[in-house]
Length: 309
Length: 309
Image (cartoon, rainbow over all chains, first blue to last red; front, top):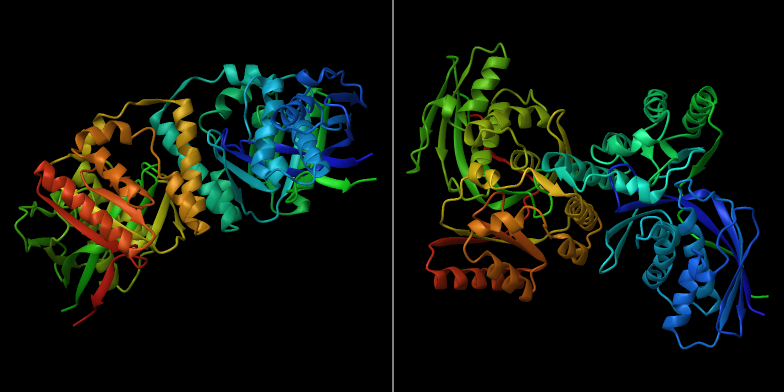
């Protein structure tokens, strides 16, 4: 039986000023998925963890994209999926995207690479729709492409790989619940033009900073005058984390996706580890359970560990 | 007597989606300025054209920055300025910026290059304040730096040079009056968040397109969902110019600054000239007097033609 094992990585959407358009792929953490090709046209989901995720494939973020693949192709096949979830759902580092993108990349591998990366993003977005009600690609795209991606447009899909220098990323996940839909609902539907101008100046600066390997410019551009002031109120300790991490030498950072995770970018590992200690110190003092990661940009995206058996 | 002659070029602010943050320097047209160093601490302005510009240096876009230089330095010197204006005031291709930036670059040359480019932008913005009431740098910065510039922030000043491939620029100046202050006043102070997101996706795409030499991406990103739909109503023929020029192969384009000039970017000269014929055809039919230019990006900025005599 054709079978594949993949590692599907966590991702950071938005990157502070690039709300809904920028995303970055992390080396760690990763979900592990085993996918088998079946003769019968159906999708079966097994959860190898305690997260109690829906096993109905239509309600599962890995299942929905696979059902869509079956619906759009004439192939008389099905998929048997086992998910070892290491990226905690609701952490804000692309847990649903990892399942969706991982399933699609694995399926594409089993089918002999018949889909383009754009096709795969399109299929995987059906998983995001199940997870949050909205098709968005700011986690899916970096998960599939690796590195940093710009999603210039969803309809029509326009994904641009943004080259960037190597950087260390420190992530803290304070274990409170922030639902993506709530985090979206508290945003105002209108913003001041002068704030929007500031934001697109920063987005332009961030992209230029990445492409010029200009760490200082990256740091200066990691500023969000629209989303962060509202959403950060849902995350205890946010302001202190940001202030102290930057004082310790981090280039900058902010909310990962819709939170509650916070990420900080650093030029070197020593700083990234200092940043981790600060994050731990703050959440120990607040008394919030938390996880931290010190990792790097993952330029590969979903990784196929072994192919057919 | 120390004296210098300079060519100060026209510029295109905004570049469609980069309202208030992007600007591009053109090879042509250029103002010609002659500046002499005097012993007396004052500024004298001579106009060598028929535009009836203010000769009071405090009210003149070249004079105000020079007065500021005198005010901020201890030097017992003055400047005698003669301006041959070739960039028509009110055309929307940085006429005031050319006078202001040209005067400052010339003065800096005469003083032995004591100012940084950033200093020069800061001084030249006093000219923009005289011209439009607001300090802005989206014409000044490309005029002084050359090429394409991002003005990520004015306070504090943060200017980023954006490398770009060579392109042809076709400009048409339909001779109607659009006052910068009017063009600014008709803009809504609030914009929809979803439109702002689209805009910063396009700004990011445009910067990435320039830096990757990706002409198609540049073309797709030259879209403005916020400013152009409002301002283009002040420019007769705008929609037709844009539509027909793109059909003829132009990458894209839009309003130059606050108008009324319209610019179009093309990959090659044949297309740029076809675009020029289309522009002429449209304004001949409408019956509006107009000028057209087919030119390129000017990577040098203000050019010193000859130094001391």
